Length: 139
Image (cartoon, rainbow, N blue to C red; front, side, top):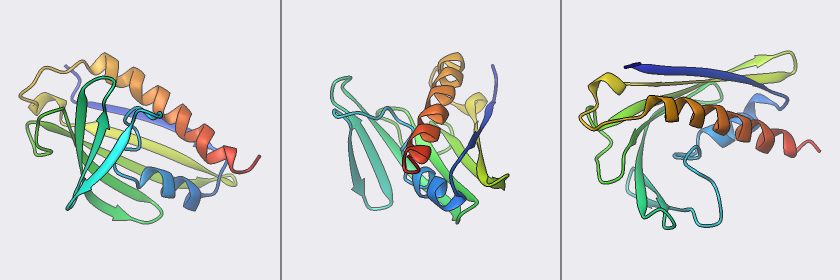
């Protein structure tokens, strides 16, 4: 199994705009009209009623506009070690835009089965979506 997934994308948008997007807990969990986000204290719950699932996300640290991290758990689990992964976003200014890097780690410690191949594909899709959202403001 792969303990970590690392991906990056260059976005033609200022670092502050990209940080505003990636610092929102759970932004990477399937976006769409059926998605609802609620806050329960420090915890953010992203609900996907069409799929009958809720994903808890716990903010861990932020260093605006360069870093944000979260614990992301599977439905029905608490966002703690063993039932969640650590998702880290690092932003670097690059040639008038922003390099966005995501590292999701902790797969080897999970007590629930996980499809890392699906997560790899998911991050590629979510980074492309983040690029489109951040650059759309410029159009």
